[in-house]
Structures are given as structure tokens and as C-alpha cells.
Length: 346
Ligand code: PHE
Image 1 (cartoon, rainbow, N blue to C red):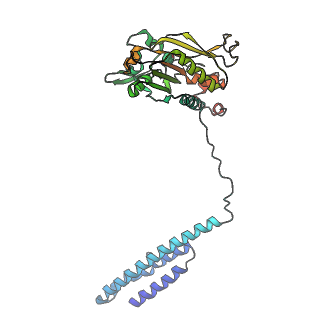
Image 2 (cartoon, rainbow, N blue to C red; image 1 turned 60 degrees about the vertical axis):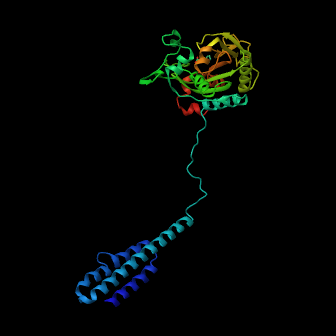
Image 3 (cartoon, helix red, strand yellow; image 1 turned 90 degrees about the vertical axis):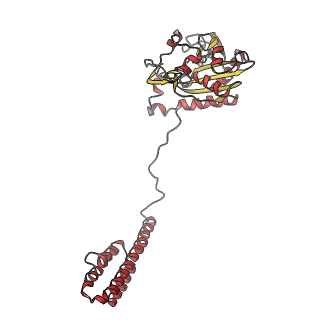
């Protein structure tokens, strides 16, 4: 029996080493180890040999089976590798052939302009700050000198987040302006402070060509000991001149915002006619650009800054509107539409 086993094992080894393909190898596995394979038959035959020979024969048989399994495995790995190498070096596989074209997108016009704005203010020493889009009534209104039930709350139609209350800060709202980040920055960094705060804001408004329920603003805040609106005029003239890459002028008009006193509206020279008067600026030569003013004492106090020691100015402009002005876009809804025919133009 032992001789037989050894002979068979040797034969199997030889055939395995000569196998030239995975199919051949599988045939050999069936031939020797399969249900009707030689070694399986020998295993069944064990019961017919004399008892004293059984242990030795059984051991030899197991040993032989194991080593054949091992050889089958090694040979299989070898053949698989060979096949892969062959496929790769096959002439019909042209590695220089152009692949499927993957189209890459580009930065959205809103983000492009936001980056430019950040760069220009960054060069003038302003930090860039961020705040949450879901705010408490405290930050969005109260701390900005808009008390509960004050008519000024109606200036901005507000989305309330249902069921959400902040412990001491009232209901939660989708922020209607970036101004709450003024308070957050004051609380975090104190005075002096020089920062802009770009971000997304929300108003409960019917949508038309110039209104959307979601848009972008940029807030600006400068707090120091000796600050006046003259500095604001200088900063904004410089900013707009750099952004539009041509001479620009700005002018102030009185305006009301609860968080500034005095409050102003800032106009810039009409981009089309540079102050001459045209159809776009309705012959005034000016375009409304933003709200601003000297930060109200109550706002400084709410931000933890002593209004007798420090003062400052703040502004807020619509980034969305700025993008529309810059590129001559006549409908705000294009910007959030995700329409590639529109976006590809920028
Ligand atoms: N937050 C105001 C708005 O959304 C703009 C503003 C900001 C006005 C800062 C004055 C000072 O209309």
C-alpha cells in the first residue's frame, strides 16, 4: 500500500509541475483528489488492509494528500500570475489609447467672487470669520439691538426652526443676515478687531428675479479706539477699486439699521457709466451697494466690549448681488439653479 501511495504521489507531482493552464490544473485536482479521484479511492480501500498496517498507511495517505494540495495551490498562483503578465504584454492592449474623458467642474461664480473679496480684505488686514447658519434669536436679533416685538424685526422676514429652542437665547431661526457673527467675533476675540464674515443667509420671501429665499452676504466689522466713517469710506473705495479693477467712488446716504448709529447706505459709482447717468442707474450715476454705520453702543455691550473705550463701524453687503453686478446677471435664480449651461460661462 505504501509503495502504491508513493508512486501515485510522484506521478501526481510530475503532472502538476507540467500543467500548462488553469483548466489542466483543475482536471488534475479532480483526477487525484476529486470524489472519484485516485487518493479518495485509496482512502476507501484502507478498510480492506490488515489492521496492523492501517495506521501507517493512513498516515502516509494523509501526508501525500496534503503535499499534493500544497503543490496544486502553488502551481495555481504561478499560473495566474503568468496569465496576467501575458494579458498585459498582449499587443491588442494599447496603453497609449485615450481613456474615457472625465470632465472636471470649476469653482462656482459665487465662490470665485467670495475668494476675491476675502483676498482683498485679507490684504488690508481683515480676518475671515464664520458663524452658524441656524442661529438663536439672541444672536440674530436681540444682541443686535432688535428687541422682541420691536417693529424692526419685520424688516427681515424670518424662517423659524420649529420645535427648537436655545436655553437662554430664544427660538432658533435660519439667520436672516451675517450680522450675528459680529457678536460672536466680539465675544471670541474682543477689541481691537478687524474681520469680514461671508456666509449664507435666509429670508422668508417670495422668489422673483431679484429676490431669493437663500442668498449670500459679507459682513464687515472694525473696532478700535480711534475709528470713524471716514475710514469706512477709504476701505470701501479701495475694496471696490481693486475688485472692479478701475477707479470707483462711493457716497453715503442716511439709512436705518437698528444695530448702527448713525446708520448709512453706501452707494458706488454706476459700473456702466461711472457717475454719468445711464439706463442701469436710472440716470443717477450711482448704484446702491450696502448698509453700514457706526456700531451701536448696545451692540458693543452685547459683544462684551466697553463702548466708552472702543468704537467701530460695521457693514453688510449682498455677495449674491455683487456677483450679479460684476457679471451682469439679470436673474438671481440662475445662481442657485445648478444649470450647467449657465455655470459654464464663468
Ligand atoms: N445686516 C444688514 C442687512 O442684512 C446690513 C448691515 C450690516 C447694515 C451691518 C449695517 C451694518 O440688511
